[in-house]
Image 1 (cartoon, rainbow, N blue to C red):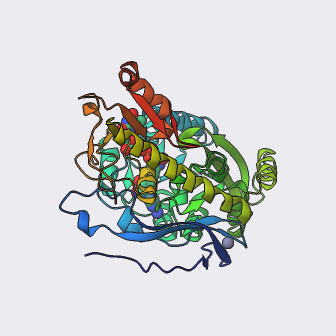
Image 2 (image 1 turned 180 degrees about the vertical axis):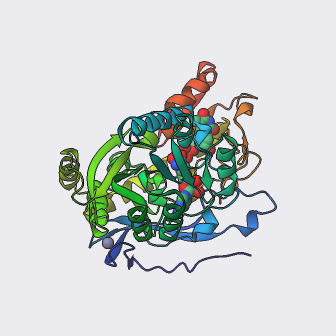
Image 3 (image 1 turned 90 degrees about the horizontal axis):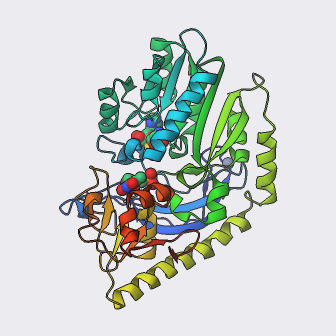
Length: 416
Ligand code: SAM
Ligand code: TMP
Ligand code: ZN
């Protein structure tokens, strides 16, 4: 069925956290789901929604104005595999070792991960012989984790799930999540669930794309259906307090173009690190909770998209061949907002089995196996997976060595 949510043009919505007024600062219009890689036969059934982002004037939480039903995004065939990047595998191995050394040191500790995907982090916890449980609604990736010996519950984490886990497994020392909490509009239920599950003195640790980094480098393609919230230390501290928690630590991470790892503890249980007020003060200095600051990003978005289209049109006129690299969720925002289709970009290369042979959402650009990138190399390649630049430039060193040129588009369009 062709489902199209009501694309109402309202510039305000009700905050999911505080019920205050969310004021729009950018509107990408009607967009497809970013991780829906359909086949030629399925492509007419694409689900669309209105992608617009705003700032809550009450609690400062930046959020989407329209919510996509969770089952449409996170289902058996959810195509994103966390283990697809060597750099991310190393990051999650380090994260697991850090948790093992700091929080999972008591007798028989228990670690719960929300959004454990293919088990990239919990696999390391399992290897250390520590009790763990992943909660992962997407059945395909959950099955991959299970094949590696990771314990997974195929389910959405929310308050009711937390109660079941607490009853079956007992309290958790750590609840951890990466690139998942910002995907979940029902943060109230998540935080009540964490409160049910966490032992006294336990911590909730999560890391997500940071609005400070998005604003600094205008990485506007971080805005898509799954990224319902764009967090700041201030907005996270606010929502934590609402549910009896305190933001006790923040740490900036260099992954996915800039993230922050937030550590929450129940109020009064842990000392607040000076890093928390320091980051909140920095955010205030940059005006990250002011509508005018965020509205200015819009000019940059329009300029980048216009420059990218102009470059691709120019290359087409010159008869140069161009391809995309990395069928990222982010690239759906770029291609669909800029209006880039197969005429300007005939294909995109990617390593993910579940994406190869399918079409980029909305734009319909075909996806080919990364192994075919060299047969023959295009003259230019748009690096959609800019968050994996070092890894991809190293893997595809031969492309540049033979005169191939990479095109990047954040913070501005540039040929490397
Ligand atoms: N943690 C992995 C990482 O950082 O690479 C996976 C991130 S992936 C972008 C987001 C994951 O969250 C998906 O695997 C999705 O199925 C899962 N997810 C979405 N809503 C969830 C929920 N309510 N509870 C648990 N997992 C959820
Ligand atoms: P992400 O930006 O959401 O992590 O997605 C990265 C995409 O890029 C994912 O579809 C896998 C793909 N990819 C490659 O094709 N080659 C690579 O070397 C890496 C690291 C990722
Ligand atoms: Zn609010």
